[in-house]
Image (cartoon, rainbow over all chains, first blue to last red; front, side, top):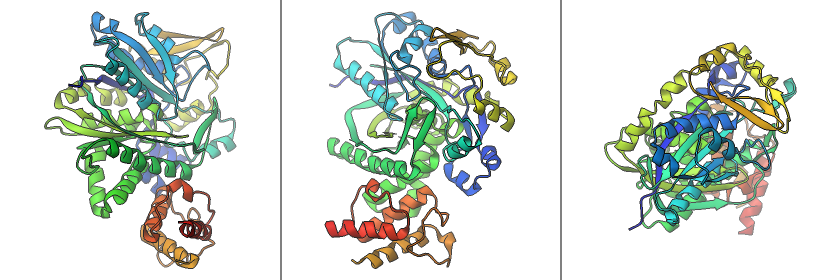
Amino acid sequence: MVMAVGIEDLNVYGGSACLDVRELCVHRDLDIARFENLLMREKAVALPYEDPVSFAVNAAKPLLDAMSEAERARIEMVVTCTESGIDFGKSLSTYVHHYLGLGGNCRLFEIKQACYSGTAGLQMAVNFVLSGTSPGAKALVIATDLSRFALADAAAIQEWAYSEPSSGAGAVAMVVGDTPHVLQIDPGAYGNHGFEVMDTCRPGPDTEAGDADLSLMAYLDCCERAYRDYARRVDGADFRSSFAYLSFHTPFGGMVKGAHRHLMRKLYKAPPAEIEADFNRRLGPSLTFGQRVGNTAGGSVFVGLAGLLESAELAGPCRVGMFSYGSGCCSEFFSGVITPEGQRRLRARGIGAELDRRHRLSMEEYELLLRGEQVIRFGQRDATIDPGTVPAVWAALQGTGRLVLDGMAGYHRQYRFV
Amino acid sequence: MDRDSILAIIIGQVREVVPDLGAQPISGGDAMADLGVNSIERSEIVMNSLEAIGLDLPMVQTHGPRNLGELADLLHAKLNRT
């Protein structure tokens, strides 16, 4: 019998501040019909004292706090998954490992492949557990990304306007091991599709470039072909009936809707009314949290999983189909089983309530943050961050036990819990 | 299938996917974005057109044309190659 493996516990961190996306669209004078098409409500916005490390630690700490000393000691791998790296050599995972107080017998490294990174990290961890080389060992996988670009002037802001409403921030932390309460992975049930394409990229630390049409097309091709590869490996797999729920990488909800429609047309020539009903039933719940944080890149397919566990009504164990896509590009369709017990655990995390507690930025506050005056840039040697950019956010953070970035000393990032 | 028949299929799909365009004239010189067709609708129009023509191509191979006429040229060339 194949051993059980998968996600034991999971948490989503959506930052300390957010912006109403409708207000942004009105402010930028964007077509409101286009806004409706995004299926988005809010997006997380990072403060100057937040970076991919603080997001990662703030996502993971509640999971670690819930574990016993003995359980924590079995975390033998910390994988950070990101396209928001802060150093070419040193991985985020070293900082994360330190601030979480984990033991030294641990593999620490980072994975990059745009928004596919979280799934690459999860599969790395799953296969580590399945290998049986260290029976009972666990891995901590954290997908952490934030979009914060150097927008020097009005022209740069204008150029970014297309992806601005959906660009978010967030981290997902997952403990992976052999008691998978949250998602029991179907071992060997996966399919991949990857090829070289220049759809979107981050050619510099503070820049993003891309072609929205090409990216959408690559996503659609991958969704179909990764699923077909899955079906080739898994006897009797049927997209329409094998999965009670689905969670797809979500740049914005409308894109997931397009991909689902594409797949249902290609595989079944399904009529529009059936496609719409199927989308609402099987994918609708996965949008619950993504609508409130924006595109979280590497973590977004797991933000989707958390959202469906939060909002779907589970009568018993059921199968979830997951699709992950990262520009450039690589993708994977895989599956696992969720249960009412896992749902209780996830709901107990109170992710929705934490998102409710975020400071709602005014447009003035948002634009101040967009200028990025206090933000530490890639390669900066020394800096001290003035946390007072938006005083209300800083005040609300005090006493929460969250990690914040204080500054840099000789390229070394300095953090503290507040 | 000739190029103009393919263009007629594409224009038919534009009208079907975006009924708001009504009786507005659409020709080969029009770009979908300029007609107000969003990116999700654009991909749906391409997918439906491929299906109607009987072409099974990766979507990324249909990227590049700047207007409906160029898209018809491209699909026509692909069709004649298969």
